[in-house]
Length: 324
Ligand code: NAX
Image 1 (cartoon, helix red, strand yellow):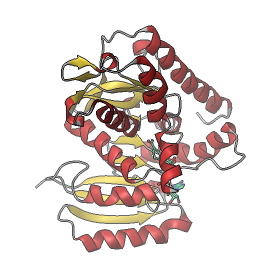
Image 2 (tube, helix red, strand yellow; image 1 turned 120 degrees about the vertical axis):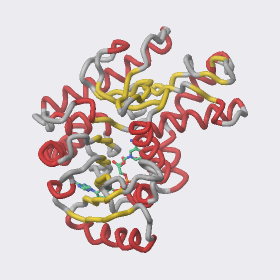
Image 3 (spheres, rainbow, N blue to C red; image 1 turned 90 degrees about the vertical axis):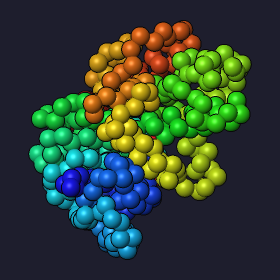
Image 4 (cartoon, protein in one colour; image 1 turned 45 degrees about the vertical axis):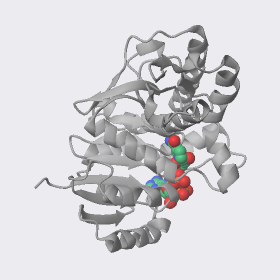
């Protein structure tokens, strides 16, 4: 039998953690034949709550769950870890400037990156969910010089799934009929969901909708969906975010022909090298590859550039603050 894969979840006592852990333990993250060991990392004040979640995980008697540890020490949590899901982050609170937000998150993702560098398994894969996810991932990566840079990713799969669902509703087709959806750029309001390569029943999606809908409804609805969920639910997206994290890691490990993920840029499509930006990607042999050769029209160019410029500014700001 296969030896268990260690999966570390930070912010394990939070709402995404609660939606995520049971699905990992049930086999949905890696596959129905892969045993898992869970490590739950929390801040000291939340360790007790995480222990409560661990008790509930025990009570499910999941056949694939071979062990659970709860800790507030990143060196313990990331020791031997194969998959690190960095969910816990410092949220923006009223009156907080971008610099304050980046500084606070640098204090989390710098040390976690170092702990991954010093303790994780050689095949470690990292997905950052906690916002600002792209730049938090960059901070962690820069503190882990011994880990291949491409193992650090950030989540835009929720944006991708939101785009699929919005388009499916508009065209009255099942989501399974939509291929080649793409989110470019930052997981923020500047993200660009691109329908110029998306195919629906063999036709290009951008040609099946009018430009006003694409520009004035589709793009802002996808980009602002997180705020709409908060408005409706009184709390931010949790189960859908957990679902997207599951999708991201499952596809990374098991392969896919086309999805969206924020990965370190190699300069493709004029995206500045090194920033962790969302691209159309395939996964082959356990590695993300940017899908090449797409034609980028002026409408897309402007929007990709605006979002990647924001990521460059975030990188400049964390450099300025000495966080990378
Ligand atoms: P919660 O506030 O419910 O939970 C966060 C948890 O992280 C808390 O239990 C807190 O104690 C813990 N934490 C804080 N600092 C930590 C540290 N240094 N080490 C370990 N744990 C730590 O937030 P939740 O709703 O679960 O959201 C988590 C993060 O996901 C937020 O940053 C949120 O903005 C982000 N999101 C990202 C999304 C994406 O698509 N990339 C979508 C959903 C979500 O908004």
